[in-house]
Amino acid sequence: MFTKIVARCIAVGTLVALGAINSAAAEDAPAVTKLNGKAAIAGTYGEQNNQDGEYGALFLGSLTAPISHKFGFQADTVLGTRDGNEIAGIGGHLFWRDPAKGLIGITGSYLNVDSNNARPDLSVTRFGGEGELYAGPVTIALTAGHQNGSNVRDGFYGSATSYWYPKDDLRLSLGAANDPVLNTSALAGLEYQPRTALPSGMTFFADATAGEDNYSTAQIGIRFYFGDDKSLKLRNRADDPIANLPGDSMSSAIAASGSRTLTPEEECNARGNDWFWGKGQCNRRRHH
Image 1 (cartoon, rainbow, N blue to C red):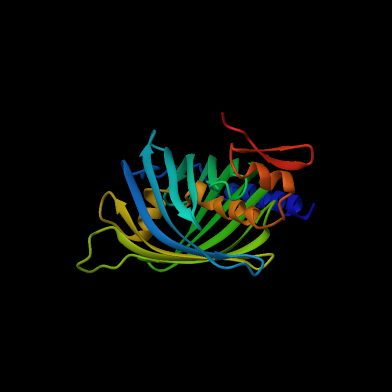
Image 2: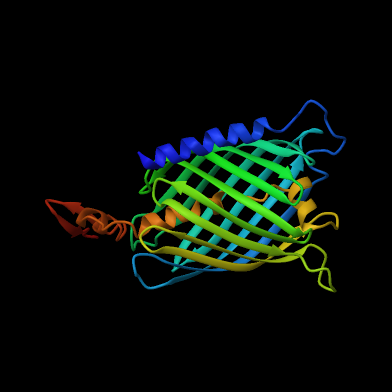
C-alpha cells in the first residue's frame, strides 16, 4: 500500500510540475537539435542483506532523433554482466520538449537478467511517463508508471530527481525512487565533461543507490556523447534525455534476486532442462 501511495503522489507531482510549463509561446529551438547519441562503459558493485559484494560491467547506449520541431524519440539499450549473470535491456522515449522550459513524454522498457541456472531468470517490463522542468541551473525530473515482472513483483514505480549544474559541464544529482521491490531508495550521482585535450563529448560519471534490506549499489564509468560540441547542460536539454530506461529498472530486478529464499521447486527448475520437479522432489532426466 505504501508503494502505491508514494508512486501515485509522484504521478500527481509530475502533472503539477508539467502544468507549470507554459506552452503558449513556443521557442524557436527544436526538441532535438539533430541525430545524436551517447555510449557509456561502467564498472558496478552491489550488495544486499549482508551478502558478499557483487561486481559487474555494463554498456549503456542511447540514440536520439528529432521527429518534428517539438517532438523527439530516444532508444536506449543496456548490456552487461553482474556476478556472472547476463543483463540485457531495451527502452524508448517519445517526448515533447522545449529546451528553454521542459520535457514531457511517454516511456517503455524491458530488462532481462539471465541467472545462468543459479536462480530463476528475472525480467521487468515498464510503461509510464516522464517529465523535466528546466529552471536556470536546476532540472527537476519526474517519472511514474507501472511495472510487470517475471520473478519480480508487479506494481507502481516512480522517481523524483534534482539535477544541479554549478557549472555547465558539471552535473550533480540527488533524488529518490520507489518500486514494488525496493520500496523507497535514495539516489545520488555526478557527471563531469572536462574541457581539455580529451576528445570532445567525453565525460566521467559516478552513481550510487541505497535502499532497504541493506541494498546499495555504485557504478563509475566513462561516457561518450556523439554530436555537436556543446556543454553537458545543453546536451541534456537539447539532445538526449538523461535517463537510460532499462538501466533505471535494473535496481528493481537485481534487488529481487536477493529479496527472498527460493522454494525447493524454484531451486530445482533453476538447474536447467536436465532437472524437473515431481512428486515433491527434484529429479534428473534420463537420457537414452
